[in-house]
Image (tube, rainbow, N blue to C red; front, side, top):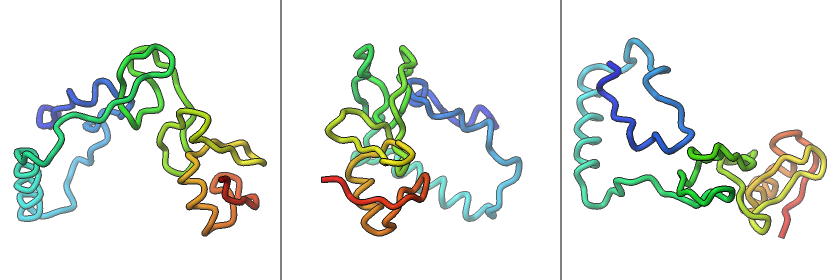
Amino acid sequence: EDGDIDETEFLMTDIPSSHKNLPKKSHFDEDAIEEVREWALTAGMSNNVQCQLPLRKCTNCGTKTYLAGVACHNCKHAVPECIITGWPVVGASNAVSCPKCHGRALKDAWNAFVLKAKACPWCDSAAKPVY
């Protein structure tokens, strides 16, 4: 039911509304659903759980916006999305581009990926780490 999900924490993000894409029927039995529900309630009440999404300053308007969001909820300014992680690529010192397709990536993610794959994840052209 739509009323079961409190999405107020996500209003300042570019995370899509979850209830629009929820399946009509669960693939889990009632015992499994209850086990997950109990875990979520316990975790939510724990002092070890951060109850606020991590934030960063928008590079355009300075408003605090969701750390992993690629578009500012206030001014809608978008930054490139990492072709490996999906996280925003903010700041030139932390960014690399594929020499062939020019896809942007976070440097650490790019280096970890191309060390193993030896290729760009977007265009599959030969690639090397950038240090």
